[in-house]
Length: 218
Image (tube, rainbow, N blue to C red; front, side, top):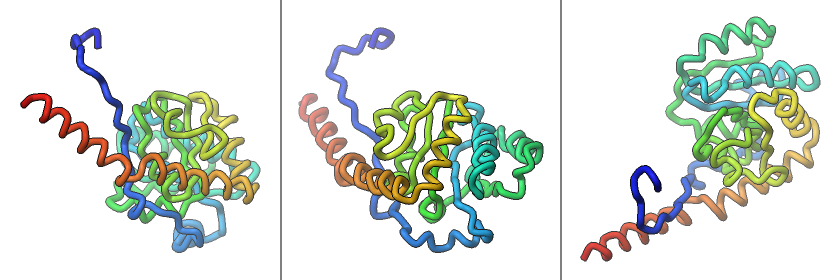
């Protein structure tokens, strides 16, 4: 507001998710293709830039596996992929991490997972977490940017400090070892995604705003 000298009213319209495209797979059909040993699945989606802290995902998996058999799907590509692959080998978890590269249909992958990791240093909103919630996949994320406006800590996901691997891993372990807890947060995430962020609730806000702008200029 100071830099651009904004004087007009500012309206905040949140991001949205297509709840008909992103929805839970309650039977986790197809998960065996990625986790043939019956391991619980974690997933991370990003452009693998440093701000996404993809190396933290590998460290979290290594901690989680001390308590629970788990496998990590890494969807996306970018500058930190090589470092993440090297770290996975260094921590001896490379056989439990699958680097999938860029994916055109993440809506098919996300529902297979139990937990979505989003350890970012900064997020304006956290669309991947919303897509996970819509799919009944519980997000474990960091308390940065607009993420707390999306995830309600302890209700539909968890928020921890940036870089706190132990705390994030502990949340993942709790979700993977307590079916009732996971079910409660997954159900709340799907409900909140539908009530607050589904397309039919957000798109009309854009349309009303466009109409107001057009009418104001007449």
